[in-house]
Length: 110
View 1 (cartoon, rainbow, N blue to C red):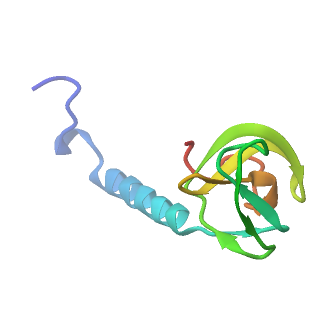
View 2: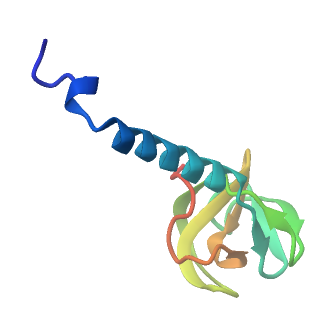
């Protein structure tokens, strides 16, 4: 057997199971999270105001963030950021219009 193979004899089974359980719970919580829109905002086809407008969301609307990526820097109701949130295929809003409770990433990077 190779030195790098993890076997039940070489791991603390309780620790491994607890870690896997915690990862599953964290993934489920992140996947189900929705966030409120802070103010009326245009939905864009890409991460910037030069991208075409594909919709509009009203303040209070809840969105699920599929992933996030850097783009044009925008100042909005929650601050200034270059982070954009993909809320659907070809649908982006500036993170400064979404109440995530964080100045950083809260979803996977696109």
